[in-house]
Image (tube, rainbow, N blue to C red):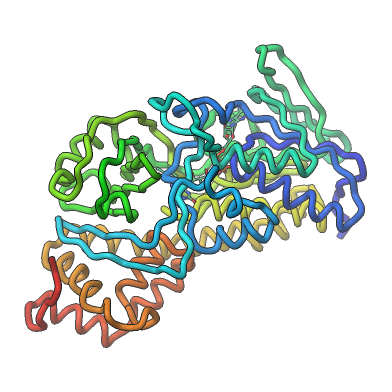
Length: 445
Ligand SMILES: Cc1cc2nc3c(=O)[nH]c(=O)nc-3n(C[C@H](O)[C@H](O)[C@H](O)COP(=O)(O)OP(=O)(O)OC[C@H]3O[C@@H](n4cnc5c(N)ncnc54)[C@H](O)[C@@H]3O)c2cc1C
C-alpha cells in the first residue's frame, strides 16, 4: 500500500514544547539524518520556562526513575553531566505510609532523580543557577535543528482534501499578533492542560483526566521526608495517594484524587500528622491544579496529524515523561518510515504503541484498585507494611511486596508484569496469615 510520505524540505509543526514535543524533534531529527531527509521542524510553545511558578512550569512531581534516565542518555542528552543545574536531588528510595505505619524501600542501584519542570516555585526570587527540565529539553531540541516560536496556537485548519493539501496552524505570537504557517504534518504535543483539543474537528477526543492538586513546601532540617520520596494513603480520604517529593530546599506535594481542591490538600497534609515526622512548616509557597490523564484519547491521528504524549496516552498514574518519550518516538518512526496519512498511523502507530499502553493500563487500574482496598482496610494495610519491613533482609530479587510496591509507584515495569508477580501463592498465603494474625508481624512500626 502506498502511503502519503514526508518530503525533503517539508515543514512539521509541533504544537507544544513540553517533553513530548521536544522528544519528538530529537527522534525525528535523528531518523531524518539517517535517511538523508531535511525537515523544517517548528515547535510552538506558549509558556516561557524561565518564569517562576505555574505560568512557567508544566506542573508535575518531577520524578525521573528507571528507564527514562537511560532513555535520556541514549539520546545523547547530557542531563547527568548537568546534574547540578537540572537535577534537584538524587533519591535512593521511597517510603510507603499506610494509615500512619511506614516501610522504606531502597533501590540504590536504580537512579531516581527529582527535577522541577519549570525554573522553580513562585516564591523563589532567582533561579540560583538551576534550569527546569522542560527548558533543558527545549534547548536541546533547538540545538538539534528545531525553530521554537514563543506563541499560543489558536486554531488548526485541515483541508477538505488533506492528502493533496497541507494544513494551516494559526497562532498568536509573543506580541499577540495573529500569525499562521503551513505544515505537511501537525504533531499535537499540547498535553491535557489546554483547550487546543477542541480545535481538531476530525473526531479526536482528548484523554479523560483527574483534577489533581500540587503544592510546594520549604524543606527544613534532615528527615526521611527530605531524603526519600514519601507516599501516603489513608482511609476515608478523597486522595488515592499523596506523594511528597524532595527537591533540595523544597518538597513537592502531589495530591492525586479525581477532583481535589487546594483546601482539601491542605487538610490532607494536616491529617497525615507530618509534624510528628518532620520539622517543616506546612505553609505553601506555590500551588497548581494539573490534570492527570487517566484514559487514552479517541482517534489520536488523522491524515497529516498525530498526537503524542499526554494528548494521546500515558501509563496510568506513573511515568508520564517516559510515555511522552515512547509515543513521540513511535510517531516519528511512523511518520518517516511509513507515512503521514491516517491509514499509516492506524496501521503502525496505533497498534505498535498506543494500544500497548491502553491494554497495560487496564492492569494498572486493577493494581490501583487493589491499593485503595489495602489502604482502606486497617489489617490488610498493616500486613502489607509489615511484609515490606519483614523482607528487608532478603536479596532484592526476593523482596516480593517491596518489588511490587516499587514498580507500582517508582519503577518502570509494565503493570501486567507487576500484576503477574502479585500471583505468588506462597507469599499471598503468608500475607493472609499476617492479616488473620496467625503469622507474627515483625518490625511493623
Ligand atoms: C500531579 C502530577 C504529577 C506527575 N508526576 C510525574 C512524575 O513524577 N514523573 C513523570 O514522568 N510524570 C509525571 N506526571 C505526568 C507528566 O507531567 C506528563 O505525563 C508529561 O508532562 C506529559 O508531557 P507532554 O509534553 O505530553 O505534555 P505537557 O507536559 O503538558 O506539555 C504540553 C505543552 O504544550 C503547551 N501548550 C498547550 N497548549 C498550547 C497552545 N495552545 N499553544 C502553544 N503551546 C501549548 C504547554 O504550554 C506545554 O508546555 C505527573 C502528572 C501530574 C498531573
